[in-house]
Image (cartoon, rainbow, N blue to C red):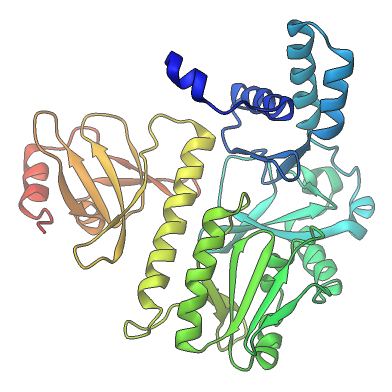
Length: 385
């Protein structure tokens, strides 16, 4: 940083400097997804176990100022404060102890964490909380019950409390806004049998739900222009919230089950729906890559076709161990040549992909040394825009 930049940089308050130190300690420990929220004087960070920690700083800041004079003492205080704040809460000892507090939560799809989970929707998993504590994968064995029994109990307990809070309200006649001020994990209620369908009458048509954040649920009637507008609103919320969940929309099928909302190509919301699905796929793959830190995991990215529609991409560096996410287009990078793009289906057709079953979302290994004939086959069929 230059002298002029130092002189002209706005002075940060003692509170902000304390928050900077806490953020620096979190990042030293590998928590890269952390955000300072000045209005709350708090830091929200993802804990890596399908939960978020909110580190409220007011009390710690007062202790920091009063009792720690030397730089080394203050540094040690920050380290101890962060370590204590991130200590995993104790797991319930028995099923009977946990049962009254069991409830559902929705999280991004993942495998490799210690959390008890199962797939719920594309790129989303359901997990079980006991109060605020995500249950770990050892819970069934520790309690002597099956995972299915635990999920069934969580569904039953969640259904018993799934009444719209007083804070729920309508924007106009057909848009229901349900904020989650109390940490009820109410976005997970869409997984409950019949719950979303029961809102059809309230919104005046087939209910379409948006879950942009773990803190907000939006439900509107299946009116094309209204759904198109809600996609834009949900996208903005998904972008700005510290706890994003999904930019997609969801509705019910003829059996009353919750499914992704997939409009026909002529629907006004079709471009937004396709873009949202691509965005979620990329974000979940990138979260996986950052969390696992495996150098073989290829980066996923969102791109656009010439017509402006969204697509997902990743790059295969030929000769380098690579685990690709399932994407629309793969950039094939051969040493000494220009990168060329091929559709995902072409790699599968050429029998160059091997699914690695230990990953969720799915990752695919690529044949380490493809033959010149295979590369020629891909090159001849590369996408040219």
